[in-house]
Every structure is written in structure tokens, then in C-alpha cells.
Image (cartoon, rainbow, N blue to C red; front, side, top):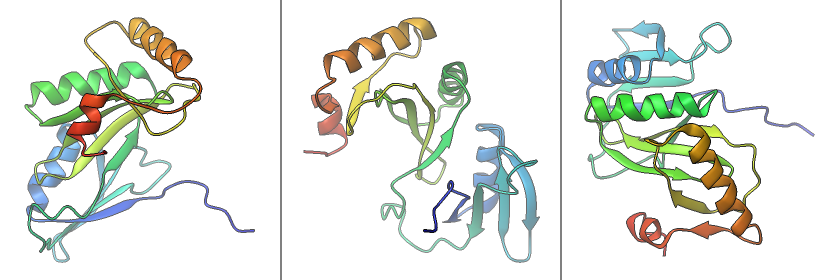
Length: 174
């Protein structure tokens, strides 16, 4: 049977191609691998030597800003320290942060790009946790303390999923 190995790339239409491309380069550190001025396309990759592009930005978004067409775009990081560094970089750049959470099996920082698309940087924890699992975490703490808190929470909730009530209300989950 045919199988999917991994997500190859996501393409999104944008209002301001240059502003969006600059954001993904400067704030997230993606590399522009190709661009077409005439067609209004910018190809970006976190691993250009492995994957030509993981994100394609295309000029010509026509939906209202409030009409979100994507739930999120997620970028996997190699370590918790990388996620923490992105958190501080996002804060320094005054990027609107939606939530900073543990999913038990991952740590994620959710934020909005300049056009309001929700983006996540995350790292797997190696833990097993039933989903949905949302618990606020404080990435200003040392990474070992963050992981100790996540491990304890997963241990306490090992028989089912967990959603912090404040996050459930904020994300309109219930």
C-alpha cells in the first residue's frame, strides 16, 4: 500500500509577498531557494540541501483577512533550546503570540505572521500523551525545568488527554 513519508511543503496565498517573505526569512530563518517576480512566488526552505522548499508564498490572496483558510503551519525544530530561542526572537520582534504550550508529546509556540496566518515552531518531547493535550508552559525557565514539568504533567494525565480550561476557552475548543 502506498504511504506518505512526510509533509513536503505548504503553499499559501498572501496579500504582501515581500513582507511575508521577509518575515519568514528574518524571524524564522528560512532560506529563499527560488523566486519568480513575474509569477509572484517565493520558495523557502529550512533545509535547502534536503528539501527545495517547505513553504511556498504566492501573491494573490483574495479572501478577507478574517477568513482564515489555514489552521496553522508548523515547523519542527531540532531541540527545545531552538524553540526557546524562537520564542525570545518572536517576543523581541513584537510578533503576536497565540499560545506557548505543551502537547505532552511536543512543546509548541503558536504565533501569527504579518498577514494573520497562525504558525507554530515545535519540538517533540519523546513522551506519549493522548491528544488533545494543551497546557501552558513558561519558556523563560531553564529547559530542564520545562521538561520536568511536562514529564510530571504527562505522568499525572497518563490515562487520557488534558486541556487546560483557560486554553480551551481561548481556542474555542468547548
